[in-house]
Image (cartoon, rainbow, N blue to C red; front, top):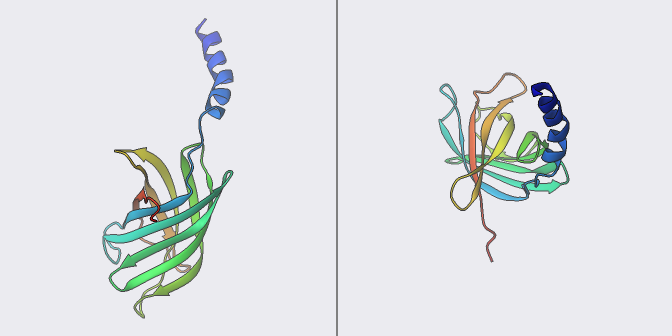
Length: 147
């Protein structure tokens, strides 16, 4: 009997999951990007501008600390119905100190409901092209459009 129940659950689960609403990631998300010990600074201002087309994500990321900033193009895909994986693919604009290198980041962000606004949170890692970056976490909230 337990075996029959287990098999039934396995057969029904994909249809139940397919019926779940897919979260719409399109919009502007602002918050912070943290970096573990050994990075340039423990916390940066961070923004994502995302466009969702079916399961595909494209957009831009913006990271800033004082006068240092970077804008990067990104692309990615949905993971299930309530998470995304994205990777930065191109540096669009920046200012940095001469000795610095930009980290091309990748992240898995998950929808977290706390309060009225949805949030995206998750780990990030990356590479400068020469070496791995000190990883961290991203925490952003959806920004309401302004008139």
